[in-house]
Length: 437
Image (cartoon, rainbow, N blue to C red; front, side):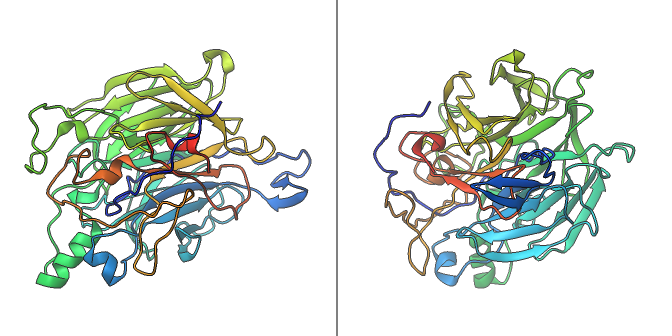
């Protein structure tokens, strides 16, 4: 069912970094019977293989945007199994900014995430094999240069990895904001002083087994393990899907003062885990206090259905606390959940049944005002530019509102390689999926 129509999204302050995450899962493409590796949609046969998706601010913006601390974000796509893996970086309007091959000759599919995992106030692209490859985690800059790489698990494991990026362990970067300020803020300071501001915080890499188990590692950008746990029973062999987001709806301290520079620990990201097969189970873990503390545990679909899920999370309704978006693998059905009450807020069908049996999703702010003219989202509301407070870690209040006005981008994990994301625009107190693409 869909939510009723609502007033257009109000003008949104557009000045900060996306929460960077991705949740890729690939199925063997064979939607048309004998044409393995192809998909027929609207009578047209296309090469299939699917995409993974992530998003973040990867390239310098123009001077006016830098002056306004106004971020222009890109989305990153990793090709699925069946072709030599390519990472493509696209502008929000679908213009290709850069592309590179991370693992020459590898055809098992690529999973991607984006975040500042090296603590240099620059977003990096994290890439792993999706299937049939060594458990390599590689970190690249936007130009395609490898900055670090490591094996997450024993080389005997070749079942693929899923991953996400978040501020889950050692530092609060404003709930997904690299080091508490934007790349644009760092650019302006560097231009004015000749010194790039030091990074107090950096995000962590969350990597999990796509098959065989539910083991999850939290590491820094060079592979130093900070957390190591099983999300489900150690005997479970179905793999996990991952995302990270701040699901808390309230500050942890009622006396917290916005702008005081004191971290609000409720702004730490949680790790949201989906069972990749066998059951539509979702769990939410907090790890910043040490260990892995189970916060939520629920079935997103009837437990007897026997299928896994993909997950994404982000606040798209102008309210603090990320919603959790859950796709039932084998369908294009997407449900939205309140992470604190576990209430199912409703569901939508993202694609026709014949188009996709798995959704890969990412949450982030896609529509901002640009120097060359505003990008106008559906509904005709033009976002405005505003100043971002780099000293405030809070994700709720006047300073940093865009963390609660995100959008949702969806691609098919088993559709054509050349698809563009389907965007659902958030805002208006209604989660993005219910406002229509």
